[in-house]
Amino acid sequence: MSAPLLSLVLACHPASRPAPAASTSARGETPAEPGESSATSDQPAKAEDSKGSARAPYSPPSTLGPPIERRLATRTRVVYAEPDEDTALRGRIPSKEHFFVYATREAPGCRQHWAQVADAGWVCLEHSEPGEAEPRALPEIGEDGILPFIYARHRRHKIADTPPIPVYRSLRQLNAGAEPVELLPAYGSYAFARRSYNHGKPAFITDDRRAVSTADLQRFEASEFSGRNLAEDPVAADLTLAWAVRWKTEIHAGPDLESEVLGRVPYHETVMVLRADPSGAWFEIGGDHPHRGGWLAAEDIRRWRPRAPDEPILAGAILLDVDLDQQVLTVWREDQPVFVTLVSSGKPGDRTPPGLYRIETKWAYGKMASLEDADDPYYADAVPWVMYFDGRYALHAAFWHDLFGHQASHGCVNLSPRDAKTVFDLTTPTLPPGWLLVHEHAVHGSIALGRFWRRRGRRLLPALVAFLAGVAAYAWWYPDPDRLPADLTGQMAATVAYVANWFQLAAGHGYWDQYAAPSPLEHMWSLAIEEQF
Image 1 (cartoon, rainbow, N blue to C red):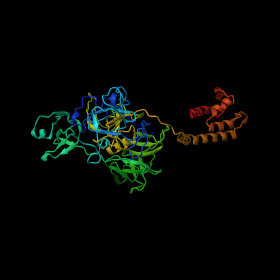
Image 2: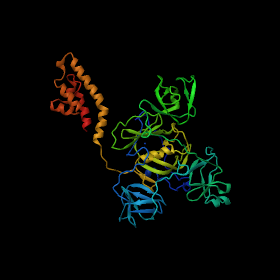
Image 3: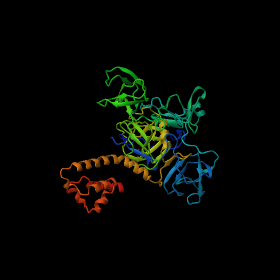
Image 4: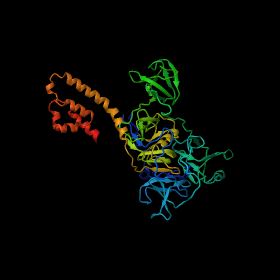
């Protein structure tokens, strides 16, 4: 694929130490340890997944039929692969959330029935009760239309001796000047359910009704950046999509900093470019831009460099390609790009690891923290739309910055909140309504052979036909025809049909014949075997 993707180190991961603010989470759920919850250069990493559309959430086919009941979890419920607590974990349903039941079964280890809640997903019905409400997709978007919670941090979070943030049992306790029940590290970022005016002394309120004064807190304003739905807004074949990633991206009259400044491209605004200058340091603006023909410095923009997946993908499958050089993520459905956007991968020293990965675990939201001995500790509460692909490394929303297009993370792949939700909805494992997290599980699919061979043909046949045409021309003009193989025509036909190995066996050729008399086609047996197997 394009350039390096996930280049990370140990950084962005579920809290592996006592969370500094377990009770202040807007939902009060804590991610499991990495071993339980772990869920993607010039060759980017790819996170493979299943089919979806550029906007609509992916809904996998199910053999379960309609639900037979709705239940309400009165405690957090763990989902297992089978009605047995010794089987693999499949997910988690938080307390006070409704979930669907599709079948029930009696089995050891549960004083009530086991309930099937998904394909390969079973829950013991203890600590649950019949419910009426429709299970809701988590996380729910908040009043700002972008994030599920209110997020804030201490105004002096970067100063080492900043005192911790006091948390009070209730708004009344805060107003009465009571002793706090908890102290939050000042370096952390925290999630809250709502804001209370509190008679002119505003406070943030958690889901468990605890209160924190807003006096020393600064609320995060979520980035409104979002990527491009290529199904709705495709890019012309003769143009390259780019984004301005500097606050003052200047348009010059020529490919030279000393040339006249014609205008500026606003931060994160898209622009179409035509070509690079010979040095590759400048790109000419194209499309219908008012400064068409102007030039942008390559360091001021990020370009989308699409390259279809090299390997065949299952019919309808989704593949995520992250170009680490350009900080661009592309969502591919088979060989068609459907969505593209900017990301923020690991900064120097916290490199995102390139490679080919699967999304293993998805969280509606979860806590993330630095390692205990980190020189620059961090803590982020209720990070939404988290997709783990390699241990602690994940794709997830970043509510604390707007540096998409720049390397700024602790190793994870940061997306804007809107883009994180889009990618989360497009990828598998699909998070069922009412669930907080889901682990992938084995599924049985099929390969669309017709589509596979068409794509394979488009990739190989043009070069193969050109090669055979060259062989034919060379044979026609060869000065000593008697030295050419007598069965050259048959070898050419067998090469096109990918049966060169069987043709050579039938003709009595051995492996070492390819090193004897000159023959331009003896080696094609290896391509035939590759295509057959």
